[in-house]
Length: 457
Image (cartoon, rainbow, N blue to C red; front, side, top):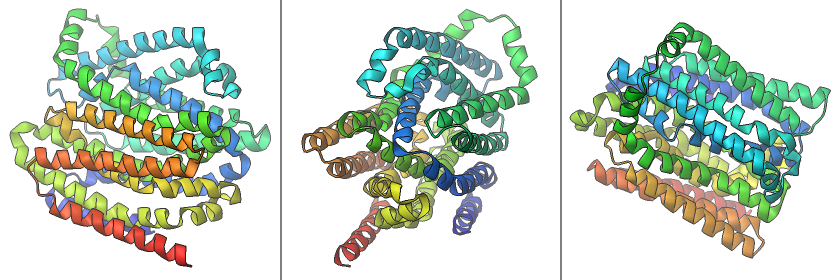
């Protein structure tokens, strides 16, 4: 109920000045339903599958997400920008061709070195599943393209519906497998793969005839080549930025397994999956609508882009601050009560990473500004800095063999990285930083007060 009230207030504030409330509501309402599904079903999953099973699944997910990022070489991000229908369709063809070529290449690499990779990451339990990652990645990347196509055409309802059904299907199948067959990680895998297949089929069906028309006509490689080079900035800047972002996001999974073993990977994977809930409900919903609106406005309406950006930052902080403060203060207790005592350590990790994910949520919501203003190079440098701070955190933590120190450093340094990105964004838009800094200071003071209270009592 509290989440719904927050979102209603959020939408009300948006709709007072900007016509994006309804679109955001369509996206966010689907994400809220996903949250309800996760809230109901996650305690069952946490009591069926052990941390080790989640550890293997987390490594699989990390490899899959990296493959998805690579699949389009950053060109997927260009889909929102073309105003010309034919340019858009050729860009769509280009993306599908890139998926075919890139995923086929990844398949060959994994066929040759898949066993060595699983041995290096200490997840031999991954087994034959590693060879199917390119196929699943191609399926997932195609689904993302189709979802972007819906958004581009102004359809903000099909995507949320698909996410809700997909999430329900994935978790239900995993529970059924865990109860009826085995509590090994294969149950989590089967739920993930089948739900992704459903999403692809459903979105393809919604666009079936247009889909056929695009690929049923002759493909003009000269036009596709022109589209590729006219959007080359996305491959030069966005692709490395997105790849580094993915590697930064998956880095803790890989390094935790190498430094602290698969059980800690399970703790981390579970805590990250729950920390991603606000990113999916708020961050991705706002990101999608904001990108579409900002792309329509473009540089020619910079004042409106500035106003919209400032409004969104303020509202994202207002809606997210209290839940994150409570998580940082009492995450271990919340996880133990909600998921079972086996997952108290996961709650402790969530506490360490909470502030980092709060700042990242704010950054994610308005990050399309860098693309709209064609200053993607800053996206790249932010991810380079984030990757460096992640490596430094794990180097220190592994040296002392202290996972808690590792994630405290990772959370603090990671938050600093995205705070720097927000300062750059404010400077580029010539906006005042006073209100933003004041709100961040209030959040930090609140966190410090709760932690001090816990230390005393």
